[in-house]
Image 1: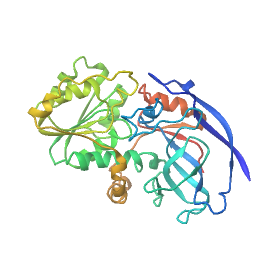
Image 2: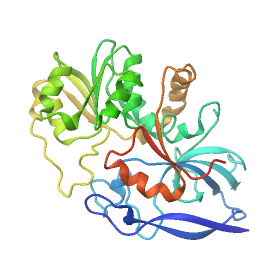
Image 3: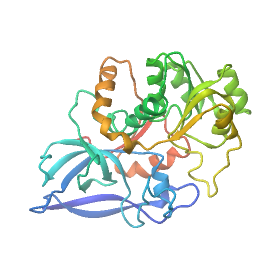
Image 4: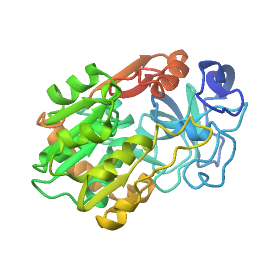
Length: 345
């Protein structure tokens, strides 16, 4: 038995800022039964996650990024993280009706192959299911592993988070407050700045677009310097932060969204600060920490249930809204975690 399967297709490789027209729709068909003897799993996609790294995959193959993000193939569906329900399964660990999160195509139905840490069964359904696209999924694990494993925070330290209202940044800030740190975030609108201070409990926040001098803005917020910087944007912000780091400061390099759409990336001039201030600057990829996912859930779920961690989602209804939602990330249109509802059940 087969049914139609609407898909979002990459038209061709992208240079510069992506446009909605770079993503087109295709009507395919999918068999609702897994072939006999196969260990594949057929899922119905419920929620899809929009993430900045997806822009890297829209570019031509680049050896420097291949280990992190293999490029999409023009003419085929793009893919990313999503929450799905099992329709049929040849895999012994999954049965019809199971919920899971992991890599799926941007389509109504996906046929997936289960590999280590590619997908996780959802066992806790007393929290919003959509959280597994963000807070309880890849982005939550990114915040948790980057902050605790890379930054080694201590009570009373000063923490700066860029792109702080985004999917990762909003959680990093709250984790830092739980640790007893002084936390400042930057964002690209006054609405987002208000969200940081009044919803997420940041001690201070600023709109980087209204600051003529980022170095001065950071000195205003951190007169004694920054112990920890959670890096999400790169470019001029990283340059300014390096001037304001304390001795033995730590920088977790999670992302550099300001650079993804540039044909030639901006240089960083203040790297000598890394030497003089003994700064530890370390990039990381969340895949390296998925073996700690159960530990992460044990840590974060009680805080969510007690209302001590909150999460803001920017929800686009319908797969047809997917291209505009994804492209909007690179223009700062989202407020909170951007996700797409493909189906509610």
